[in-house]
Length: 351
Image (cartoon, rainbow, N blue to C red; front, side, top):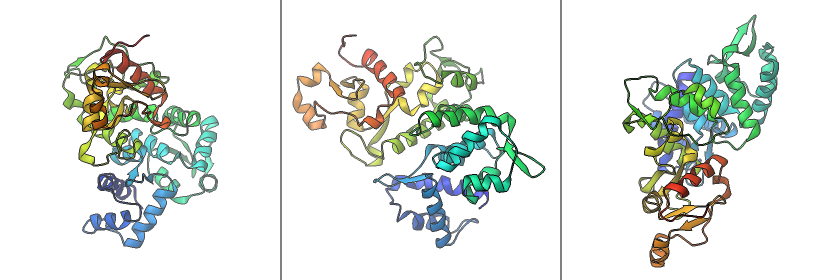
């Protein structure tokens, strides 16, 4: 399949995932969506495509519907033949063990390899075809290697996944995507909070390298496209449901910032899924106003005001011993929750 057609289809999958369509229903839903387009496919071909997406872990069944991975979404939204497109397609396939091993080896010395060697290492011709349709490879005498000008970025992404194979999206790819969408280099756009300090990310050097400008746009609309991706990523991470009450009606769910947008010291903080929770409207309001927060282990801390009215807690379904599932308590999310406890939570906690 040609890259342009593949990307268009991924965008449609990304759009229909909020319908709570199961993996079994998805091929027919996609088939009907593209039936009148120039890139229409037979139902059997659509089913084969979904088999490929599942086997390469570009898509998963959350239990509340299908979901495209954030890296695959970035790839679908990236400009043709851009650096971002190449980074995104590599990261999208890194969940496949053979692909991860290939790039870990290739990033060491980056030798030229014959196509047959690469196919043998990847174990999948389709993956190679999608990689080769970007600017990823430098080709010389029918031999391939990672293009030298992309090698540093690929190494950073591969290394992030080597350290944490459960990453939702790498810091590097998130920074490059933000750079492509938000006009941080346009000095006519007024920024605020440039004197504030960003949370202590492990990979803050790559963030500052890609996006050197400090602060956030004064007009939040400047980040509208990234806020949409931010919400999409939280839907993916939290499986389309509020972790507290488990409601999964899309229009009742809010991509809630932990460190409020207005307080962010850098645009990366404002769009990082680690600075967020997917909450229903009720829990979003209470969390946003500081009526409850979470400790470093994910246990809920209720404000004295809520505790005085325990019937309110019962109505809102907040148990005193509630704990966010461990998989959501990432290192970076704990950094943002520390900010929430210090500056948003209504009660002063002992340091």
